[in-house]
Image (cartoon, rainbow, N blue to C red; front, side, top):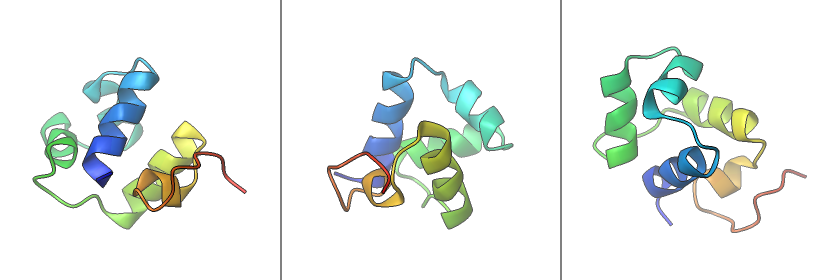
Length: 71
């Protein structure tokens, strides 16, 4: 699974809007939307922050694992 798909699925599973997550990442909504659409690569700092926010492993967030729990 691609990073942008996993990021979108996590957001939707947590009943958050794109605006909510853009606020968490302290970025403009349009920038976050580009990450979800796969138009821009998600920077490492943002991936780490999202993994912490959703309480999932970084491997899960970037699609390297289907196990969502952090060790």
